[in-house]
Image (tube, rainbow, N blue to C red; front, side, top):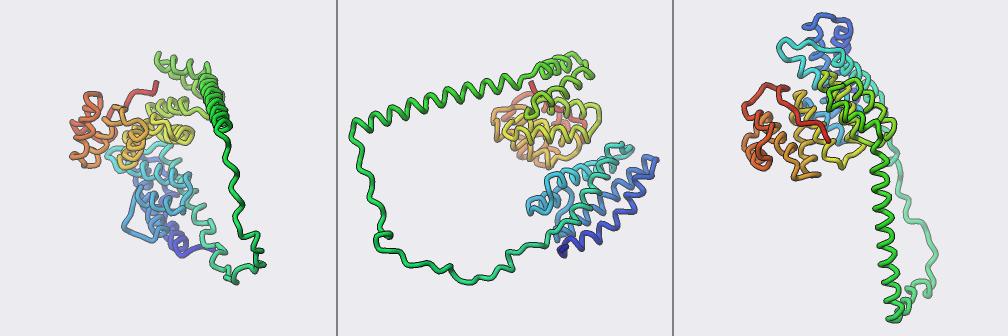
Length: 339
């Protein structure tokens, strides 16, 4: 059965249907932008009702609901994408794209699914305590612990230790061989062709090669990183977001995946989220100067100049120093593609 939060959120979300209808019918850029902002405003009101608070908004309320397991990961991504689209629509002269409309449609569908889920069920509160299960008393002999095994003689202990060492060394050799075999097997020719084409400026060949690489090695993040970067360069925000998030899911311990997603979030006006992914990249590779430098830029965007100075010092000279001139949001040059 629906919870009180779901009922309140459903009532609030009903108000989003009118601006969503306008968004799907509008053709004038100003009407599209106005409708897009209105859709997010009503969606945000519904999210706040679901969370039971008016103190949070934007990405913060999405994060709160996600931490409380009221949103699935795909739900959170859809709402964050809609929030980013609405933020862009607030800019003077911005003309919403089809990707922005798709983001609104995806978030609208996700909200409908969230509000239809059964969040109020659960039998844990209906289970009554009926006392311990009766057991027969144990016999005195059963209550005594078993005697310890006799100690091994010195020669046997030495032989056992030697055998264990040999086994561990053999296991390490086998593991290393498997690791390098896996690493080289994942390096497909399509991935190498994609890198070469991207470096040569042949974007069509590069895109086709990286797409083939995702099929050759479905568990590899690197082709998704390049596809995400190329989509971002082409202004395809939705595809860029999907590819870069997929890269993080495939290799969550790879600092490059977090760094690339952070660069995308910073370039699309989401510095709070960008900071969290740059932070994770730095945790995974504390010596990565690119992550350190653009973390400083992110902190500047968030008004934390005192912390930004420390990261600029750790990063040293680099392209990230250009952001110290306080460029407008989205004008910052992102770091180079992964190698």
